[in-house]
Image (tube, rainbow, N blue to C red; front, side, top):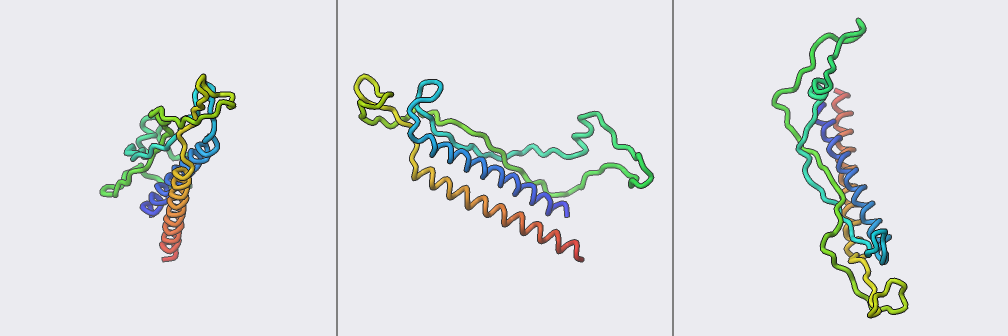
Length: 164
């Protein structure tokens, strides 16, 4: 049963990552024409850097680190020690962080009437391509959907195991 719950945990993290990706895409689309931010430069496209999270933290190691010991405080509690399952398959998790485009590329548009135009009449617009953002949005949507199917399948398997 623990393996099924692990599948749900990993897929839940996948859902979180795809929601973050959708938020980044929405921010990029919303700021596609922002010519001046707080630092005086045009908006810089953001991307979600997704990587493997290899740090697996288990309950007993967290207890030891915190200097806490489990004890039986009621006769209704089961006696015993915390033990780890040997030979279990370790699954890696996923982690993400938002990164700003460092290329410094901007679209130059000649518009002398724009308030942010330089001396030659050019305005720097963010290097945000709406088509690229829409493709990223569709990919995030499909990955989100796949993770929900994985969670539903694991949940169904767990329910069937309980019926045995």
